[in-house]
Image (cartoon, rainbow, N blue to C red; front, side, top):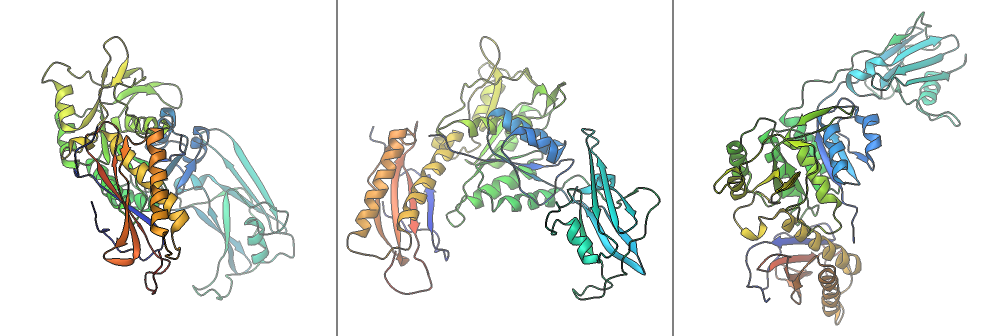
Length: 492
């Protein structure tokens, strides 16, 4: 059962890998998991991971758009933590404030894109800056006043607006920057105070939302997620190329070198035919990807019933996966309690349901009595029958992460002493026994602890485990790296 580890990391820590190939015949607590949505939104900074722990805060940050609705449905499915990355490229609104001999101060909107143009400013005597904004979605207004005073300098006024003066809260609408006559940090300030007074409120200008997010924008959003601990990603789009890039991201992030295992749930746009979904699933063919079909009807944020693309159903389904205490729980035959579905799939032998299941698509169809259900909960992976169930790779990820974290916390960087590897083995046995007791695993064979033949200063832990509802063991391999892979000495 011995294996060598596929990488030689430079960063100290625990690393793990899952080998899903058949090894041998079988012998007879809720986590705070996090979902992620990438897509277009009306508001919210791009290039930022916005974390939400309840759906109430979504509208205040995102306002509307596909990413907003997908996140809303992910919470509706049962998720407790959702990260949203707004895909796209925005230009922020700003305004140069005129003074004596130039414009010594620039205000830049904190509201992304075109919405920043709704921020207004007025300048009164003695460098008094007033800011106002009315939210067109809620009608709520914001008003802020900053009293610079007759003796203020550009730096003091900027610090006042930016909340760097004791007792003064920073503006929620703008940030302030010193405007200089050149690019050098010590270039002269462009003009001086006092600021020129205005006769009426003036708007910040230049804010722009850009075009609809494209391939590069979604790639940038996925890059933001590289540093985040997420479990399931949903792209709020029906584009097959974007969904393929999400799977590539999941595969890379789930490698032993990266240690941030994740999966994705996807769905096509409204009007997609079963044959088209089958072709898409065949192109993806990944144990880390689930496609749900068809779209369905539900209520929008204003309470109106409408049809939603299947990628919104995917967000809801991801929330269902995230809500279960045990990732080994399948959604097969689970109820889908939306008011209606886009398309009734034929259940006759050789019909659409069977064709979709054979292709690795997760169909939603009417229940025999009333309502709707997930007919089966599949990944698009057809190479190995044991990993056609979507929850299998999620279970393997969970088992590997728990074993890795427990052993790395206790043993990474420890000196090699007599009996240390046996102590590591005993700790690994204890963790695997816990996982079997909890039902995460069915069985686990006694792990093997040995020196890495490619790096004798690292220690390998090889554990053969049996996932629920499978007939073969898979191999979890964990590598404990020394504190410095460039140093010398026999340490773990």
